[in-house]
Image (cartoon, rainbow, N blue to C red; front, top):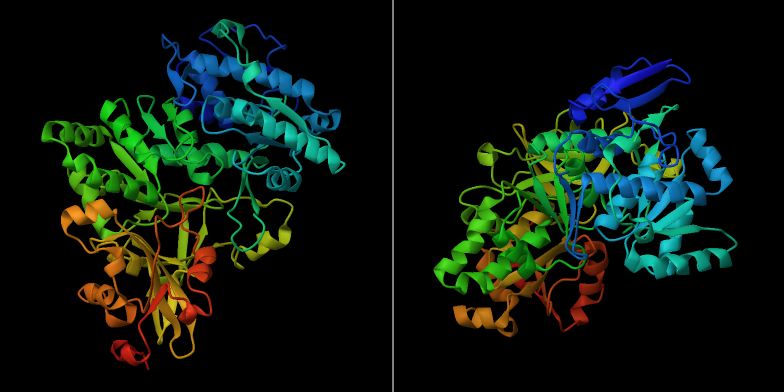
Length: 610
């Protein structure tokens, strides 16, 4: 018996409801219809595409919506491409056909039995990435996105760890893909490598020639996406996100920020990490919006110019990006003639939402953006690869206290280990299903009640939460006090001569830990023009004195190191404290002339909690 679902007049959310409410039986066939006429099923393009893959179904819906011309799905700044949803669907079907023909019989059999199959994706954010990502999902396989900067040996670790049946590459990664095939062969393993670009079609298919048909239901609890964690405490772990998570988590984000088909986001984040996928990519595709990709190293000058040009509604970044854009404004844009300067400000104010992850901004940065945006706030949020979005600031941020990352997202349960402050433990609908092939690590990541142990410390005030930092590196225990490194960093960034800062704890026999700060100073020419202090003249005595009005004595750093240039960062823009802390402040730091020390004799003003 055939069941027909007419989705020509409904949106993505309604599609999900129709699919979820359908009465499923073994061997039931489902076809999407356009108005009252069924499309002809052309097996050469599509066979057994599970409609419970809502990312794929939404792309198809955008084609059926009868908008003319077909709306733009992807703008790829690097390649100069602009592709509609119809062209995207066409290219997905073409690549899917090749991928099916290239997979080993064992992989095809596993797919037919709804078993987990993993396929790597090696492409920068852009059109090739989008086609590859959704093509893999359309097979019922799980996507394993990887950084394009990986050397062959490291990339092979990800492929071997996830037991990838194949890897799709972008055009600029084709050689890396072939090197991986050769390396894997030398290890006695086989790998199918397919470049995306040769399978992109010159013209889109006529919508009436495409039929989505399935005689199998894809289990929403099966693997849909694998994201490797940073691995700062060992080899990266592979966090598995369920198929159902991919769409439901994206829906939650889209609802929170009010994303619609009228939106265009400028996407400048890495696409092998959770934020670049779950915040800046999938919610927009599932909403029928436009994603404008610019891959590669972030360029704050280019970003300001793009904002000035207009045509964007949403921007998503990390704290480092917003601080770099602030610095460019201070150094360059602020010195332009008012009519020109105001064009950049107007471009920023045309954005209806600016999103930022990880933690709240330092006070000077938050105040700068509030001024530039005409009183609007950047919408901070908090989440993790394993748990999705946990806290977020509402679109109307006027009621959110300064420094807060917002309130708990709908459906999420949060508890703090010590009442209103402590380790953040999370349980919710968008949790990962586990670390791939690592039951021990999965069990260790949860408490006895099934809450995920984030490793972050937070404080709750009413319904609002404040992130204090990582328990392992951002909570400093000095003289009996618990000090948030993030709180200290926020105040240091308020000093006019500081550009970047990293605060860590350094072991000390008397105090347990010393508070240590590594800073980079603002551009020399900028400081000279403002009459500010030169970095060569900055002493720890002056540094501490400048902080006395902002910090209590026990929080003020007693170790100082000035770093030339900026602080090194990971591909996601984060300062890796676990690596840089011991490097800048080694056990023998007293013998390092680059480390300024507030001596034990001078530390009489440092309180000790008894």
